[in-house]
Picture 1 (cartoon, rainbow, N blue to C red):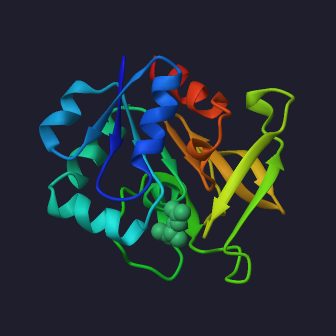
Picture 2: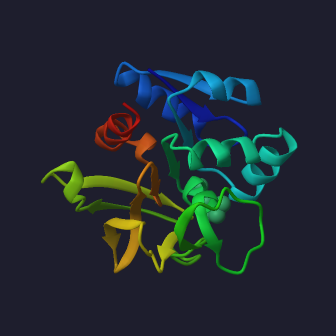
Picture 3: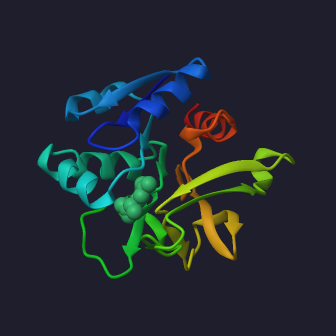
Length: 188
Ligand code: GLN
């Protein structure tokens, strides 16, 4: 099994490390032909406007979208969550746009640029998941077939729609590998 990590910009190396800690090969994706080799794709955190623009410049946007529509598992974290949402509040930036939800960027306010909390994520078991949020978005109006997997302060911070998984936080920045493992199980 090989999982691609979109390597346009942002925190892609940390995801590769998390995958390798689980014994899965992670491949930095920069070219369209590399998409043929992978069983799933991670879209990392970073700046969603920059990642989206570069995806168009590198001619990856349409191919990634149609692969995800055809069932390729995709996991977006932070900026990656923004890129997966159908609607991005107050923004017309480029996006993959396949999850039936609205993303609000930098949603927790400027005063709290970053913070860490223990989240209750029932699909990962009983132990809380220590989550790192950095200028994080959240999802509003999550509608079927998308479903909420975790909330913080009443806001959706983890959601799934079939083969699409989106987290507002950065699981690649902690040693808890359960969310990456959950994604790999989706990709199997
Ligand atoms: N605020 C960024 C955006 O909306 C996301 C931040 C992050 O990925 N850490 O693109």
